[in-house]
Amino acid sequence: MAVVPGVDHLRVLNHGDVVVEYTNDEEANSMPITKEQEAEILRLYHAEKWLVNTIARQLHIHHSTVKRVLERNGIQPQRLHLRRSMADPYIDLIKSTLQKYPRITGRRIWEMAKVRGYKGGYDHFTDIVARYRQRPVEAFMRLRTLPGEQAQVDWAHFGKFRAGDAERRLLAFVMVLSWSRQIFLRFYPGDSTSNFIDGHVEAFKFFGGVSREILYDNLKSAVLERVGDTIRFNPNLLELSSHYRFAPKPVAVARGNEKGRVERAIQYVRTSFFAARKWTDLKDLNEQALAWCVGVAGERRCPEDKSKIVAEVFREEKDRLIELPANHFYSRDVVSVKVGKTPYVRFDLNDYSVPPDVVGKAVTVFADLNTVGITHAGSYIAEHPRCYDRGRQIEDGSHLEELVETKRAAKKHRGFDRLHHAAPSSKAMLEATALRGSSLGFITKNLLQLLDLYGPAELELAIQEALSCGSSHYSAVRQILEQRRKTKGLLPPVKLSLPAHASALSAHIKPHSLASYDKPWTTQKEIDNG
Image (cartoon, rainbow, N blue to C red; front, top):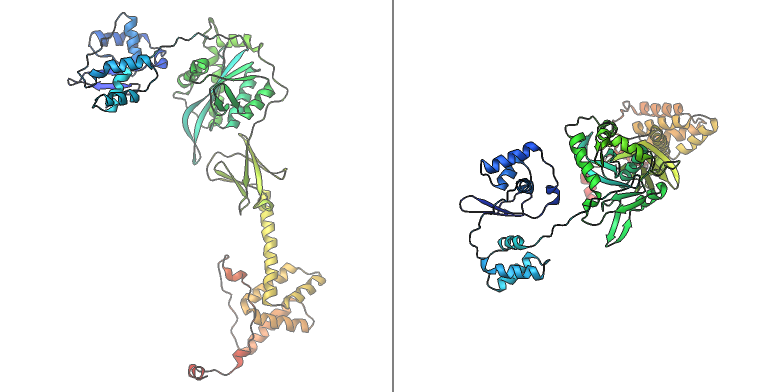
C-alpha cells in the first residue's frame, strides 16, 4: 500500500482511480490560500476533471483545503464507488460495534471478525473500520486576553548550523504578548534549560516588563512531569517566575489551540524572517532577529485591531506589564565533573584548563552562553570564554606556567633521587654544595651528565676521591674521571641520544663491583668442567 503524507487510507482501483479516506486535520483546514490558488483549484476540477487528491498533490496543498474550496463554491466532491470486498459482510458488525463502543480499536474489531470467519488481512480491514468511525469535530472559542495579562512561549527548530568543527542544533526562542501580538525572537545553540531561562530574561528586557501569566506547551524546560492535572514544574522555571512575579501556565495536553498565538508567530518567523536569510554567526543572526522584531514584526497590522500596527498596540500594553525587578535573573548550566590526569575539564565538546593542583579531584562547572567558570571546594579556580567548536583546548596561561613549574620541580627531585641511587656519595657532595651556597641545580645537572657518560661505578669512585681530597666541586669530579680514563687508555666517552620518554633515563641502577673484570679470562670449556 502506498503512503501519502497526510493520507490515512488509500486504495488503488483496477483502472488507476484513487479513493482516499482521511481523518480530520485541524491545522490543514486552517491554512490560508491565495485567490490565485482558489481559482486554479476550481479550474482543474471543472475544466480538467481532476480528482481532489490529484489537485492537492500537484498544487502541494492539503486535500482538505481543496475540499474546503469546492464546498465553499457549492460543490460536493463525489466519492468513487469501491469494488466489492471480502469485508462487506462484516460492515454491520463494524457499525454496531463502533456505535456501542466508539473508542474501540480497529484491531479488536478485526479479531472479532476473524472469529466470525473473516479471512482477510489486518491493514485492509482497519482501513474500512476507519471509514465508518465517527470522528466528532470540536468547535473552539476564540480566546481573548486583557492588556499585560498573558504571553505565550515555545521553542522552534530551525535545523542545524556549523560552529567550527561542531554541528549544533539551531533553536529559536519565541515569546509573543497575547494582546498586542508583539514578538520577541532569539536563537540559541540548543534547547537547554539555561538557554530557555536566558530567552525569558532577554524577552523581558525587550518588552520592558512582564506579563502576569505565561503559557507553555508541556516541554521539559517547563514541565518535568504531569499526571492529569498534577504538574511538577522545572525548578529553574519556578525560581525565574518567583524573581519576575509571573504565573507559569502549561496548556492542557493535546490542546495546542490554547497557545495558537505563539504557534502562528513561529510560522510567521519561518516565512517572514528566516526564509532565505543570510547570516555569518549566531551573534549576527540574533542582531538581525532583534531588528526584525522592532521593524517588520512591529509594523504589521494588529490582528485584534486592523486600524493599528502592532507597535502602536504594544505601546498601549507596555504600561500594563509588571515592572521589572532591579536586578535581572542569572541562569547557568551546572555540571559536576572529575579532573583527569591532565589539568583540563571536558565540557560541551571542549577542554578548559584548570590549575594542576586539582588534577584527580572533583570540580563544578558553571556555564552560561558566554563564560565557563570552574570552582573547587567552594573556591573559584578558573574562568574561560565559552567555545562552541569541537575538540578545542581553551587555556589560561597562568595554569600552564604553574604546570611547567610543577614539572620542573618534579624533574629536579627526580634528578636528586637518581644520583642518590647511582652514586650514594653524591648526597654528601650536594650537602657540601648547599653549605657553600652554590647552585644545587647546576651541580645536579652536570653530575647526571657524567653519570650518563661514565656510568654509576666510575662516578661513585670519582666522587669519593674528590671528597677525600676536600673538594665538593663538579670540576674536580670531572677531572678525576678524565685522569682515570687516560690512565686506562680508553677513548673519550660518547653520550647516547635517547628519546625523552625512554624509561632508561629514570631507571635506578645500583653500581656493581668491578673486581670481576680484573680476573683472568675463563674459557667456556673450563666453565663447563667447573
